[in-house]
Structure formats: structure tokens, C-alpha cells
Length: 289
Image (cartoon, rainbow, N blue to C red; front, side):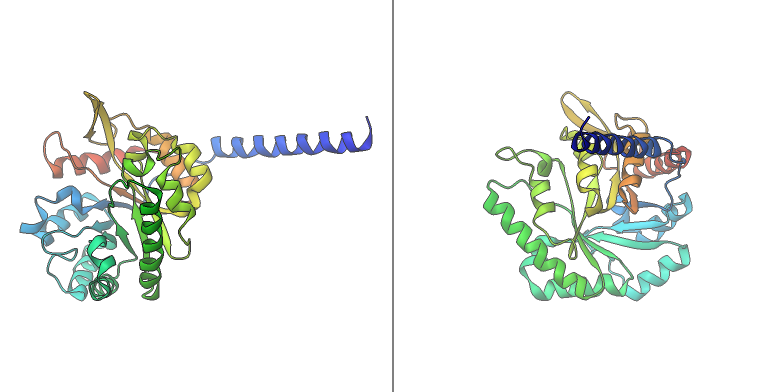
């Protein structure tokens, strides 16, 4: 065996051992609990407007330590001043970590964007997230969205917050052979734009979550935990652990990729929102991933 061939073979062997060690380290990593656990308040959208503080108090009593709000009929702070909301949540031992906000309107109106940023900043939030943009018909449309994300993200960052995008299944459905989600990941500035991975919708779209996170995991800081089954060809949400998502595997993938924040969201309920959310947190507390 000549020296060049020997070195080549040695290099391949070393790389193979390193890869195997990495796989073994992943497989043998100590089990972890998901904590703290958050909840997306859209899960209680029909209850919240009538009694925001009462509903949030019940969620805190269940054990949820982080809230993610959304732009409802009374805004994402539910008609409360930012300092009042922060003080109330501090008293519950809960942080309002993030909110989905009316991105479409704010992206077109600098004053509205500024107002949203100031409200989020005053209430102690860390993230402002675009909840949905809908499927786009062309790559020019997706490019405009990526450009707008970069622009809005830069403004949000100036206030010490982070802007991000929450996916649905449509951004994981191919357009001319490429996934729009990957286009957004590759054409937005990591310094200004982060991502929230919905672990249900990537699964509904039929994308390999493991492969996606191995390639892009560092771009995601938050994730949504929700479960579903396909019934008559359509996804129907269930309480956690009652659907088709393999959470033991999926949440380990999310932890290993560096996702920081885990937020339960449920939009369909076998009995009622509060019963489902109580079941959901009980299920997550039993998991060691």
C-alpha cells in the first residue's frame, strides 16, 4: 500500500469512527425533560377575550411557565398596558416569551410596526413572530417575503427583540422542486430572522424532520408541539400522545439541534380546550427524551 493510499484509507476510517461516535453519543445521550414548557394562547382563543387574566391564571396553575400570545380581537396584550401585563405575569411566575402578531399589516405600516415593537418590548417579550403568510405562487413572491422578513427583522432587533416566522405545511410543499421553507432559511439573515418550527405541520407535509433539523436546526429557536392523526385524508389534532407524532424521537431531535423553547399548541379538542391543555402538559411531564 503506497503512502497516499494509506493516508486516504486512514482518513476515511477516522471519519467513519467520528461519525459512528457522534451517532452513538446521540443515541446514548442522557434522557431529558422538556422544561420550562410554554403554551400558545391561541389554544384558548374562544375563552381568553372574556377573561384574559382568569384563563392565564388557570394555565399557570397547570404548570405552563411561558406564554406565547397572538393578535386577537383585543391585540396580543388583551387591552392591558405592557407594564401591567408584565407585572401580572411576573406574579404568576410566568414569562410572556413571544407573540404571533399581525405581521401583514405591520410590515406595510412603519408606525404600526413601531407600536407593536414597543408593546412587546414593554411587556418583556423576547420574540415577535409572523404566524402565517400563505402559499405563494412564484419564487418572486417568496423572494419578496424573504426581503420583507429581513427588513422587519432588522427593525425588531433594534429594540432588543427577535423576529421570526412560524411555518404551516404549505412552506414545506415543493414549488418547482424546492421547498419554500428552505428558501426562506437560506435567504434571510440569521442575525435578524429566526424560525419557529411547527412539529405537526412539517410532519403533515411529509418532510423528514430529522434530515431537516440536521441541515437547518441552528436557525430554529422555538417549536410548537402538537399532535394529529390523518382522518379521511385530513389532519385532525388530538391531545398530545394520542396522535401519530413520535414525540420521544422528535423532541430529542429538537433538543439536539439546539431549539430553546417548547410551546404546546392545540386547535381541536376531544372535550374542551382546558381539559386538552391539562392532558397535554401531563403527557409532556411524563416524557424523558
